[in-house]
Every structure is written in structure tokens, then in C-alpha cells.
Length: 155
Image (cartoon, rainbow, N blue to C red):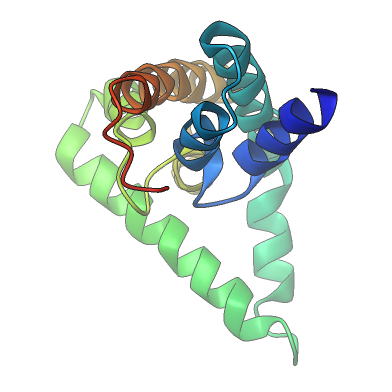
């Protein structure tokens, strides 16, 4: 049982997949709904402070390196693009825009991209973490509902 929970915990930490993929997996593994939800939320949120504090600096540092430069540049551009999109659509409502960006379970959105975009936009740490947390909760509720009803397109 621990192995199954640990699996969904790790899956929810992976960029792009995040809890959007971990929750359907948890239901396929027939794990209890509430416990799975909590494990996936925690797993998805653990990277957020580290992304905010270090990702931008590391990506800028590695953008001109031989083997990692292309990937780091891709990640930096994706974060900048996401940040610009958020800022254009949100204006003053950046907090709500970030929450919805993280919370709507579509490809390319999520806590990783949203937090990177927020750090590029120089949003403050508290607002970023709170918006990401609320967005992850929203995405979790959506994915749990979809998975629970049996509409999983992932498995």
C-alpha cells in the first residue's frame, strides 16, 4: 500500500504530469479518494517554493551551457510566455489569473509553469504560493471528480 501512495506522490511532483496524472493513477490503483487527494496535493506543492526561489536563477545560469542550454532556454521561454499571457489577461487580477492558470487542468498549465511564470513576473512569494496552492486544490477537485466518474482519458 505504501508503494502505491509513494508512486502517486512522486508522479504528482513531475513537471507537466503533476497531480493531473497522479489522481487518475490513484483511482486506477483503487486507492481511497480522500487519502489520494491529500498525497497528490502535497506532492504537487512540495516543488513550488523551490521553483519560485531557484528555478529562474538556474535556468538563466544554464541557458548558455553546452549540453543543457537548449532545454534550459526552452523552459525559460515557456515560463516567460506563460508569464506574459497571465499578465496580459489579468492586469491587476494577477493572483486570480495565476490561481486559474494552475487550477485548470490543461496541458502546459500547472504549479510548475505557473510558479515559474510568477517568479519571472516578480510576484511576491506569499501570493505565488497561495495562488498555486488554491490552483492545485482546484485542479485536484476537477481531476478527482473526472476520475471518480470514470471519464479518465489518461488510462
